[in-house]
Length: 531
Image (cartoon, rainbow, N blue to C red; front, side, top):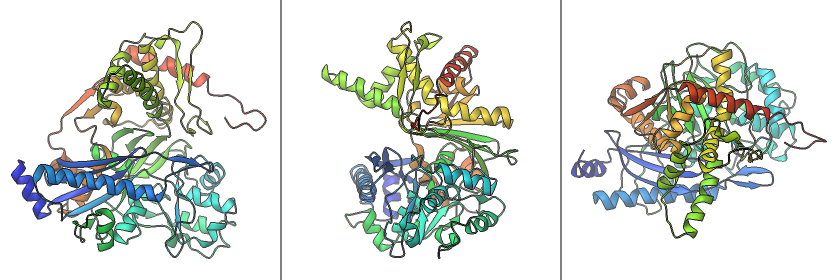
C-alpha cells in the first residue's frame, strides 16, 4: 500500500488501533486493513515499589497512554498529511493479572497491585486446594482472597475488580468487560461455556471468610467476551481521555480487552491446538494450546485461554530480561563516558555477538536474574546475584552468555514439567520479544534451553500492541471466520520467519548450566529470613 492509499485509509477511518501497557513501555500501534503498522508511539515507564507493593499510579497510566497516542498521531500527520480523526476499531491490552479494586463510585480502593507481587502465597494455596485447579499468586482472585484473609478494610466497600487492560477499557467505553484470555488470569474459565466456572464461583462464595460480605463475586468480576465480539464503543469522554487534542471522534468499535499473553499468541499466530509461543521481556511466558486437559494440577503451570477461548498451558516466570537490561545500561554509561553514543539496538547487538564467543562451559559462571521474586524456583523476593569462583574464566563473552542462559533458566524449569510429566508436544514454538532483535544469538540459546526448534518471525519486535491491533481489526471485520483461520489466511498468509534447531553441544551445555543453577537454589531460610 503506497502513501496515497494509506492517506485515504486514514481519512476514511479504515484503520485499527492497538495499545498495550507493558511492564516497561506503553506502546500505541496503528494498522491499515492490510495489517501493516503505519504509525506508532511509545512511553517508557517503570513500576514503583511502595509500601512493599509493586505498583503503577493511575496518573502514570493515563500520562503514558496519552503520550504514546499523541506521538503516534503526530507521526500520522507528519508522514501522511492527514489528521487522525476516525478509527474503525480499538483494542486495549496490558500485562495480565494483578488487582485493581473499585467501590460503587468508581474510586480506587487500594493502589494497583501488579502481577509482580508475591504476596498471596496463603490465598493461592488455599484456592488451589478448594478448586482442585492451580491458582497462581499473580491472579486477581488470589489478590482478592488474600485481602479478605488479611482483614483489609477496603474489602467491605468492594464493587468491582479488574485487570489493567479492563480498567483502561472501562474508562474509554464505560463497559466492565474482559477478553476471555485476560479473564482467565482473573478467575478460572470453563472452556465449554467460555465463562467463569460456575462450580468454582459457588465454591468461592461459600468460603467461610467470604460469606459475611454483602457483595456477590459474580457481580464483582468483569463480564467475559471472546475475540471478535463487540465489547462496546469509544465514548465521547473516552475519546477526549485518549486524544487530548480533541481530534478523535467517538464511536470506534472496542474489541474485548486482552492480556499480553493473548496478544503474544495472536502476534505469533499461535492460537490453534498443538501450537505454542514464547514471549520474553521483563517477565517471560510460554503458551501451549492444549489438545486435552492436563493429567495433574501443577503449581507451576497455569491453565488460561486463547483470545477465542481454547485452553492453554502457561508457564509464567517473573524474571527474564530485566537483569540483562540493567547490565546493558552499565555498559552504555561506560561507552558514554568515552564519548561513544550507541543506539539500544547497536549496544545489544555488540553485547550479544560477544556472547557467541563464550567458552563451552561459560567459564563456570552462574547468574540469578531475580529482580523480583520467582515462584517457579521458590524465591520470595528480588535477589539478583551474579556468581563466580576464583578459578572461573571471567570475561565479557562468558559473562554475556551467562546472562542469556540465566534469563531463560526459570522458563526451562517450568517447561520441563510439561515435556517430562505431561508429555506435551507442539508442532511449532514461536518466540517474540526484544531479545530477538539481534538475530540468532538469543534464539539459539532458547532453542538449546528447551531442546526444541524455535521460530522467530520478522515481526518479532512488533509484539503485543500489534497483536492487539490485529484483534481490533478482527472484531470489526472477521466475516464469520474463526480467529485461527483469520490469522492463517489473512494476516500470516506469507510470513517471513527463521527457525533454529537445538545444537547437541548447546543442549548439553545448557543442561549442565541448569544443574549448577538449580544447585544454588535450595538455600534454607534461617530464623524467618525472606530468601
